[in-house]
Amino acid sequence: MPGLLLGDILPDFEAETTNGTIKLHEFLGDSWGILFSHPRDYTPVCTTELGRAARLSSEFSKRGVKMIALSIDCLEDHHGWTKDILAYNCEEESAGSSLPFPIIADSKRELAVALGMLDPVEKDEDGMPLTARCVFIIGPDKRLKLSILYPATTGRNFDEILRVVDSLQITAGRRVATPADWRPGECVMVPPSMTEEEAADLFPDGVYTKDLPSGKKYLRYTPDPQAETELTSVIQTAL
Ligand code: BEZ
Image: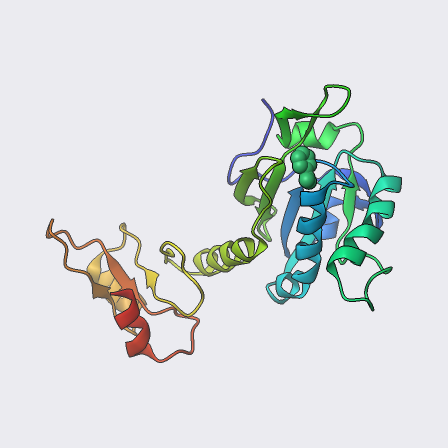
């Protein structure tokens, strides 16, 4: 099965999109990227998802993330459906204009196959597989940093996708990890491979270790190094 593994470089494919022909690497430039596929144009869940993605586009731009969508429908369908998405999801003044990201028309399913985006369970009227709801987050080095795959019947949570972008960006630049449900401003975790001496040097705001029944000192927090919040309150919340 073709597809991508974490750390793979995204192929520099050329594709027809609602904003003209693009080459992926040129489109991404030095930015982060999100490539997300959906099963079909003119379907209900996809309409809510692309609308939500459009409403959050300024949040993705703030984080330096370029967005691009993909499905196996043709450009004509993408353009017609865009009007529905905008009318259903967006304020009246933006309805009728374009989406803030291009949609790739992968009518021959070539990209969907190469990138491992097809869902063998979900089929079109001719029995051909549709694209699943894939989320690929791509780093400025063009490597795959995160991949999530949803079935057609479960719409994505784009707030969660922004949250993982925040985690990927903080962990790309620093030797930290983020705990379950982490949000910017909350304590981050010291990775298990880091010695106490290294951690003390790297985290001048302190390292706080949770006492555990095993006596092992692996649950170590440090305040978010990018946050401006008051330190004692974030530490108390974490511990
Ligand atoms: C939808 O977007 O609503 C959808 C698409 C394909 C299968 C099921 C639901």
